[in-house]
Length: 208
Image (tube, rainbow, N blue to C red; front, side, top):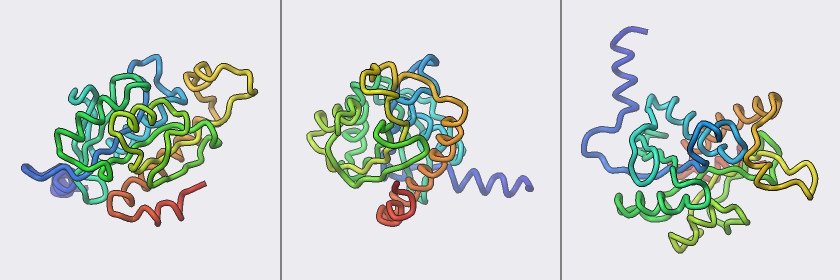
């Protein structure tokens, strides 16, 4: 690859000055190294993969979270990892939506889902929070559940009496970790389609 190819790639993936943010892509999780690679941080993992693919670094603190601006699927997007802890994710997202004067339909949320096996995805145009505290916070603070989301399967508790908090804050084993890497790559592809208005295509291709 020549230096000209490198500069061309950078220009394609860098937001142009003055261009408007068209989508907020929010990955849910908990801040802090102790939560890295836990089931509850599946959304953060996808945001990291998206940022790497776009040549961006999610390191600017804004809207109570870590952010980066990047071109995803040809659209200028804000990548957002709320630092409010999972249960208050909506605080960060509402601030970003209000700042950019975006409609709830211009929000894509990526989060974990214990009802799906590791590696499985489920794309939804809208829907209730389903007991997920991060989604609950967003629904309550925006006053709407009319936002797109990508649910990342992380697996069910080993038995009904197992503590839920302990399960979602637990780390993946080697086999499930490999499955999650693949599903994160697929979630990146889904996001690229969704910002282009191709949610049906994403659902048909990746929904489990």
